[in-house]
Length: 204
Image (cartoon, rainbow, N blue to C red; front, side, top):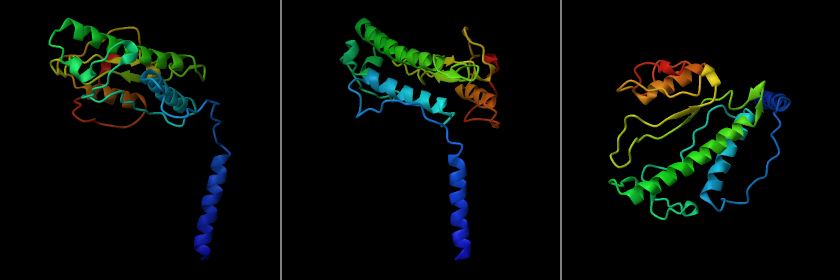
């Protein structure tokens, strides 16, 4: 019994000690439910990630905007056909314009997130300065299901990444090579990730 009570008290002391180093969470309004529009929902999720980074509650986050077979429509931007159906456009000009509108919509939400990070002070700079934000997709052309030449954006200056340029990967370079390089720049130890066959040093 003494051993049990001692263990409980030890845990209590550790909790009390941890509370002395609690980081204050910034004031922020909590939503009453799911936002009315998809754009508002996306920005709410992005804002939660920004708060997680700001408070150091987490240093890694992933956000899946939509699954590959999503039939979501986008009435807020005038697109009433399903995304997945439109992605198999077969060169149809009307469908391609709607796909372009969807791509622009997602890109605008991402730009909002980057601005949120850029306008959030962190150390001597801002959160974007100290982050590595990867944005993209696993398919280059939905009509053909191409998995090569993926359109990827790498934002932020975390890990000493240089921005403001277009970097072309050599033919056949696995996407996981980039993941491995980002993990390395975070100071984590990993010899490989998935099908990686080396680091993607071109981001230096």
